[in-house]
Image (cartoon, rainbow, N blue to C red; front, side, top):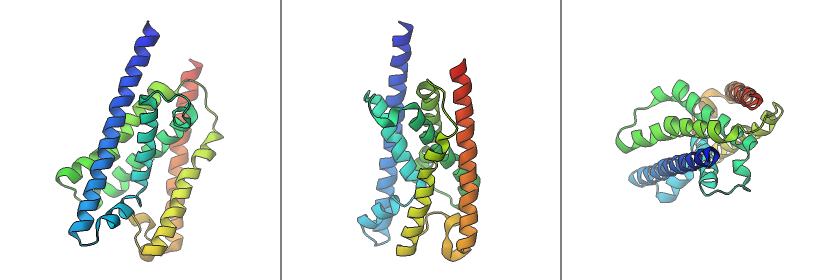
Length: 212
């Protein structure tokens, strides 16, 4: 009976977290399209810009994982403890990097402030809560961190290619025309090191909890 109640609580948590994550993503998409249209660039430019951000892509992956859990898709790779931990490391990186490096670079208001808080603060905390509830069911290996790191590395390559094509770099610390290639690479390596530190901490917690 206790196991059934615990699983029921997990399910409702996943549903609430998934709903919050998808609401935030759809709100930001609408705001991006509206801003692009206001500036005379068209709706598709808003969509194109929307998918430039690590925040958006990472929140999409987290929302998909939460939705898979909410729909009881136990065979989905996104619900496996290792993958959930990798997603958790990336979305925690989103929250930390934004609050340390980017929060003071602009002043969102109204609905944009709501989307900003949800995507950078609420969603990372909700997903970290889901990781704690559902992912710590088996010991994890530190070697898995290398596999998880493929995603932020791939994003960096993606952002560099996009920037070279259209001149838009979504974050000031990877703005090649302003900082130069060398400085951007150093910044990217620093963020990657931060990712490894976050991921290693999560693995350590998971291993300790599974031993108990």
